[in-house]
Length: 58
Image (cartoon, rainbow, N blue to C red; front, top):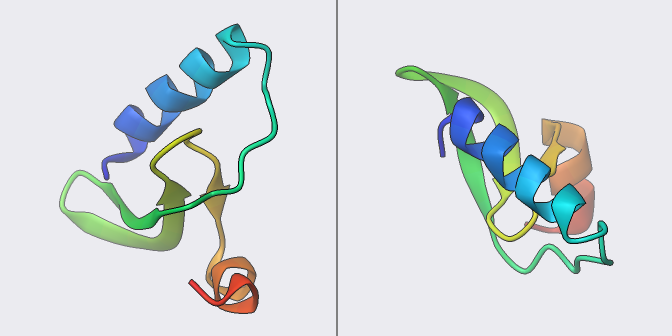
């Protein structure tokens, strides 16, 4: 998922009142064609560092 797309998801999630998200699915985050090393929740747009998503087991 592109970082700009993740930012849009984050804004939409905040507009919904920022309900609790279980982060059911994460995708690798890219800035243009470069992998940032982070992963992004496809539901709420929250991004997680490599250490965070490894700890989550995702």
